[in-house]
Image 1 (cartoon, rainbow, N blue to C red):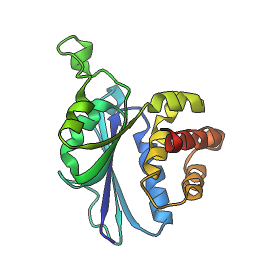
Image 2: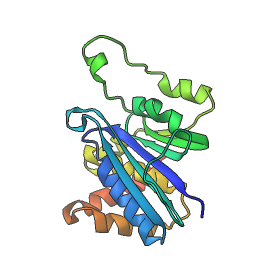
Image 3: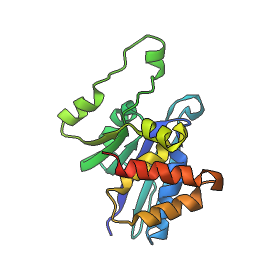
Length: 191
């Protein structure tokens, strides 16, 4: 199988590392060679964080270059725009529509570009957008945005839902398993 590439991008503290752990675990269980690499910016201060997940018959490097990502999972709209150059032709962005103001917006140096997703779609980028925060809150915790987005990603994979939920059971602390299963289902089944 040709190597497939997934980028998980967000802001520090949003749970991208758990999402990559869950995805890596699932793909290993499916028999793929998997490489995961995490790049932390100023993650503890709300800075950009990116995780690479590559899988296939044999993967030699964990890094995804420009134009190679099959999927970009974005926890925030501006992060989708920041990393769009890594998306391959025909790739897809799955993004949370909620906005997290970066420092230049907080300080008043610039305004948040609210139409950023429309602009990307106007350039032919395929975007699946959802209010992952609202769905996470419906599941029981705003911290479940990461699993809501994994649920949405699962729609594009030919891997049974039961295997995704088994991976949740194995990767999430027991007291949070049911909440995360609900978040996964809400992400997978939302319109």
